[in-house]
Length: 151
Image (cartoon, rainbow, N blue to C red; front, side):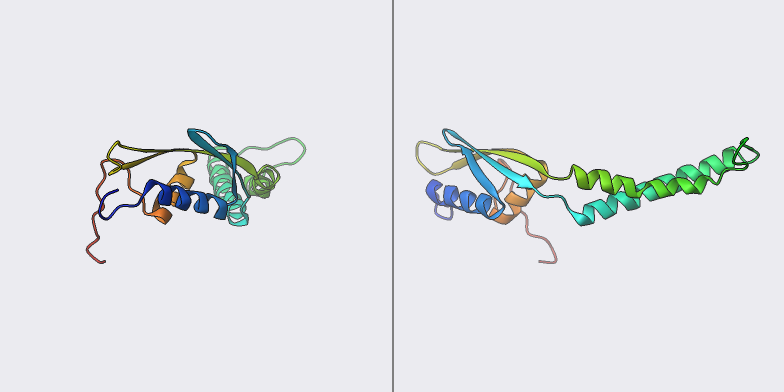
């Protein structure tokens, strides 16, 4: 263990506590530990999808209105292309119906012979790995933490 570093056992305990706190359970334990967790759907993400779809449909409607100014359909006459934006809530409904997913994280802990350097190999969702690095204050191999100017 380095002077300012942590023991492998302590880091393993921190990783286990982090995973338990984020609704992950140990699915398989061996040389590589596999955690499985349920990632819940998010209302803010559903609203964001509805908003983005509405903006996209409004943009499409503007292009169609400019492109087909003189279009006359037999039964409905001149179409109001901006009614396409009424489709946007279905993006949120689709997300909400299929929003929950099971996420896998694989963690492998190793140390060198002198026990001066611990190496943690993590496979999983990029967002979850980034959050884990920030929470546990881990650094990518070869990276050096540089303090910001504003503190």
